[in-house]
Amino acid sequence: MEECVVFDIDNTLFDSRERFDVVARRFGIISPRELPFEIQKEFWKSYMDPALLSLDRPIARAVEMAVLARRRGLKVIIITGRYERLRADTVTQLVQAGVPFDALIMRPEDNYQEDRDLKPFLVRRIRCNVVEYHDDDLDTLLEIGKMFPRALLFLHRPDGTFDIIQQENRKGH
Image (cartoon, rainbow, N blue to C red; front, side, top):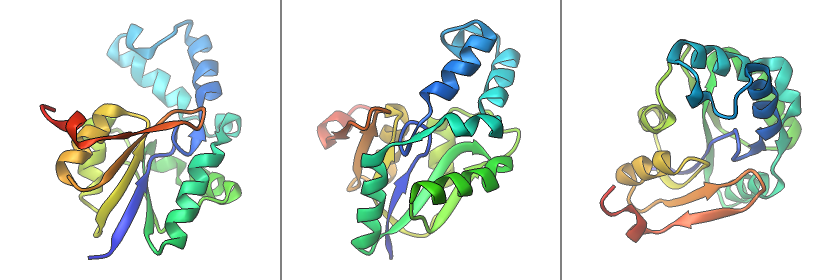
């Protein structure tokens, strides 16, 4: 089976903190968890406004990791919590930043699952052996680690730094 590397987008390949902060200020909050669920949906809808994607900045180190994975002969798959309606804008953003990718798998419309539940479901759609998974959410990485115990799991931060989640950190999760 072909080997692949999977990347998240927001706060993994792109620093989306400014977009988040703009929306948080509109709602007068620090975290969307402060809001009732129905209002949280409105928050995330505003966060996914294509007009705000221009606030995102490519994270050079992560983009370079995707480029190097491609040079090593690995498929580069993007799995994102962004909604399908953002596909064209997302493809433009990835291409402009120089991110190589073989597939872009996006959140279905009207899906409000946590990423730790959604992304393992979406990763089952790809037909390759995941050897690296890059995300900014530890819970998502731990779930992926259960599916691909030999994969390297990279926990990214929007400042371009990351940690590799070691096997011993996965036990008990």
